[in-house]
Length: 185
Image 1 (cartoon, one colour):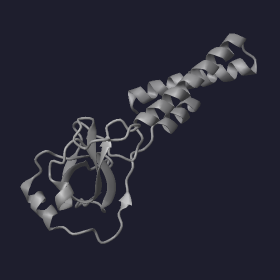
Image 2 (cartoon, one colour; image 1 turned 90 degrees about the vertical axis):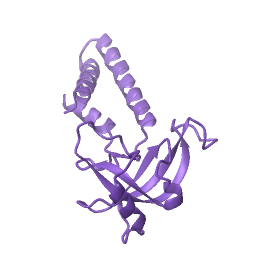
Image 3 (cartoon, one colour; image 1 turned 30 degrees about the horizontal axis):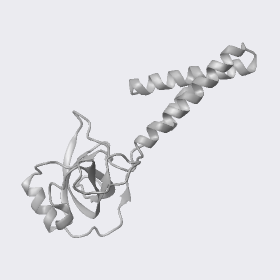
Image 4 (cartoon, one colour; image 1 turned 30 degrees about the vertical axis):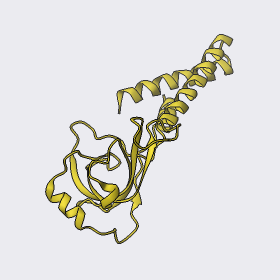
């Protein structure tokens, strides 16, 4: 288990225990501390979910087992790096490209994912294909390499659209795990 998630679950469990014990038969100060800590934890979890809205690919893990695969581009749009704001100018340094991709790996079925990248390095908007680097154990971790292998780049250009509709892969959410872990603690 992730150490940060364990600490968050421990703090959440202590806050919930203080709230329940203070409401049941404990001193009033324990109820107030537990209530305030629980509200603070829920606000922090809400803010982290708003900052990381999910659906987009996560960065690759250092030391993870990565592989390259061609990908078909279904759409590209300019978005603001802050998900709460809208992009006004595609050439602004605060914008990034959002690629809607179907990754076609050799070892598993094709899957669809959104990838954010500050540059269109492989001219994917024009060609409709690109090469991506993905984590073989956690397929929601995808990155656009600056210099893809030339053999895969040539194979990606020769690809057409995938035959069947690919399933969308999404990274797991963190907030429910922290709340359930806190309730268990």
